[in-house]
Image (cartoon, rainbow, N blue to C red):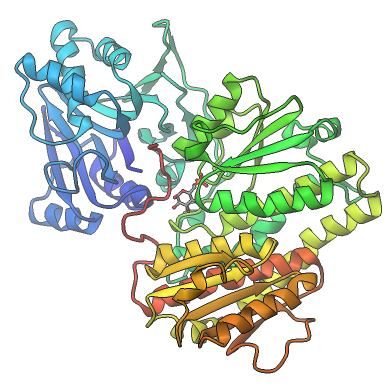
Length: 610
Ligand code: G6P
């Protein structure tokens, strides 16, 4: 949802901006721009389109070497994608890039217009630039003018700002949107996400809410709200530049699909003790914590919410406590009744999703304990939650999540076992068999499913000429179907609906015509008979059926046109194998259709607006 970057130092800033923006492109890719100091002037170059368009423009009209610059890649909110709405925006002495939304931009725009400011774009960002410039014109002090503007702006923002007359200085501020500062041997950096800075440095510091930073050669300072200044507290990231590259795969999504067996193990093994029992003490969560949970409210968006649905089934089945799953954007408008003993669990790969963050804050304001399951370390949701469990999937770059979702589900499975053990629903031996399944059967099953590439390709060929596709399943398989349908839609643009297999006949079956693709998932032995009869219902109406099911079922001949068999070494192995199959089918379909797999249209990976 827009990516920002900035640099000041001894090296040439332009290639750094371009390199960093190419990593940040996953946050938005409808327009792009940079602003760089050229002597005492600040020059802007920006355009609608991808980074390649800006690269072409720079080849035609190169910038001189610059030691101080900011850059932006955009996901449009206020004003459509266009050259004039692209960032950076300049008003008077202020040039800035912005990630977030200024909610009161209309009233601010009106007030500034009355003062004689004329605007050239439809963006809220230009309003922010004008507001800061207005204060700067009075005080001449960059930090004071940012602070004064922050007091007037409602909404969320991360800014990187250049001020005329402050050569070699980049200013930054944040509220709600993420912003990382970093220190390299050749200068100081800032970015929406540390992955963009990995080619340059590993030393970082996350800017906190309402903080302002000033970066200049040899000096970085954070300005606190009480006007005092502090040095950033630098940390070393464990991410490597390679972890944010394709590593020989044709797409990040494919790479990330292949990384899942390792990621699944990384997410659970540090949380299993020598006796094979769940142990979250390294996350600061003691065993007794699980004992007192009487109900759980899972809140998340998109695939993370779908992982929550998988978790709901596991936790209710194993631990026998009620679990409710809410779409984060709905949570605040109709919050569920949460009695004493409730725990709100926020799931987020990016740790920055605005709706999930708002739900977290709502829970905290209402005194309900919160636990975040997050992949990106040191992000706002991870920081603000009372407790956090990192999924350790490593950087996920493809917009459509795969390893993020998979590791969220593994962690939820372990939490289900931890609660069930703490409340004596299962004994040590049963718990151990779950942790063994998660660390041994699951990675093996995922690796096994990676070998079926030809079959996924064949299935994909059967989907590409259809406008509508259905996924059906019961119980856990309904939850998996929802993710399967989202995956196919978001990257192949084929309309796909997920249906509880038994519900299809109550209306939607009227859409089944000869040839309509229906993919049925069956990971639960007890439900096969029923799902199989639902398959017969669609098949008798001409549907083209793909069955993704356990390898130990008595499948009557002629049930499906294509059957993907899932390993059954354990329940967990079967479920995670199904996840792999649905992701790979979506990938192959999008590949055949020539879609932009890692950057699907209209989407962004990190959705930092509500
Ligand atoms: C976006 C992404 C989805 C993701 C959702 C939640 O819409 O495209 O893949 O599931 O946000 O993101 P989060 O980072 O909170 O898991």
